[in-house]
Image 1 (tube, rainbow, N blue to C red):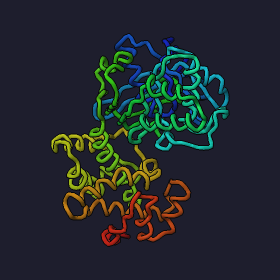
Image 2 (cartoon, rainbow, N blue to C red; image 1 turned 60 degrees about the vertical axis):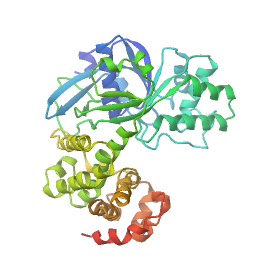
Image 3 (tube, rainbow, N blue to C red; image 1 turned 90 degrees about the horizontal axis):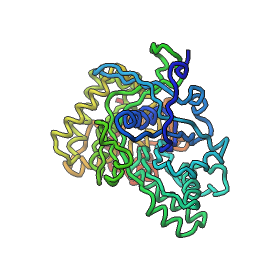
Image 4 (cartoon, one colour; image 1 turned 30 degrees about the horizontal axis):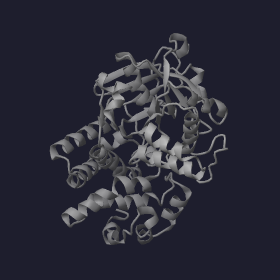
Amino acid sequence: MKINEVKSPVKRTERVIQFGEGGFLRGFVDWILQAVNEKSDFDGNVVVVQPIEKGMCDMLSAQDCLYTHVIRGVEGVESQVIDVISRCVKPYEDFDAYLKLAENPDFRFIVSNTTESGIAFNASDLPTDTPPSSFPAKVTLLLKRRFDLGLKGFIFLPCELIDKNGTTLKNIILQYADLWKYEEAFKTWVEKENIFCNTLVDRINTGYPKDENLELGYEDNMLNTSEYFHLWVIEGPQEILKEVPFDKVNLNIIVTDCLDMYRTRKVRILNGAHTSLVPYALLEGYDTVKSCIDSELTLTHIKKCVYEEIIPTLDLPKEELIAYADNVIERFANPYIKHYLSSIALNSVSKFKVRVLPSILEYIKRYQKMPETLLFSFAKLIEFYKTDMVNDSPDVAEFMKNSTTKEILANTALWDQDLSFLYSEIVKYENK
């Protein structure tokens, strides 16, 4: 028996266009919208746009876009059928259906998670492409259709893990408007009639539990799992709460005029802990974050990184930072979360630059000495890239594997600066 044989879809007004059908959006945004529907008069459904040619929309559509979301942690286990997705649209198969979304005035929100590299400009994209390759180019065409019809703009809530994600998306859309020679009135409409919120998202979603057998009583090929913790910080006007009442659902959602302190805390502590740990742990033979927490060797490494070298570089109240870090360590220890180090290791060089390097440089600046544990992590990152476990772009992987430590540190294309001054410290930890 399949999930759509025990549960029927719920008809609501389609209000949200969602770029992405992966586990994160379904276990975060759609889970939140489920609560908003249940606890307010929002009455909104989601239409999912598959942003790339190959994805999971066919599997989702096969079960009427219903799926089960399971939350697990020391708090217990909760299971819920999510019914907020009404249908899927695949631009690579039916581009007209995609553009037709612009014609519906009920659509008010656009959410997305197209990975860190998704919000990017591709000068080869053309307005005649059906569709263009980049996510922002696809959105530009959607906006142009809506503008031509004289309809109201959108509220954008991008969930990509890049700084100023909403602002960056808007700027790239305006780049396409210039490239494609759209009228000034369109660019003014993009600026004035749309709201591009910068956001910060935080939840560990582990997707389909491939190596487990969860007894649901029915078949669900889109089963999704996550931890209990969730945080969505939205940098935008309080007026958006009049259109989507996040404040009515008692979830960890913050609408603020500045999210910088929340982003820095999360990127440096949670993501920084991951990235400073993973290469070292993989070299030592560990496979999951939980296995590292269970090991005195790697747990000591994580705690030294976070409490002794990362937290001292941050400006929020120390008690608040320690409480957040304690919570992060507790989340890493979640017995239900099998967060594989190999998946976190994807594109480790670019992650290290954003998540760990700022802590190293700030520590040196503030204390006039070297952060030994973070530099040990840097050495292990370089050592890791000499192995066959690497999952990165071919040019980065090849350069890291075939270059000396001195050449790697001096590569300004990787780090946006010359890090040669760290050489004598990092070589102390090579092959140790």
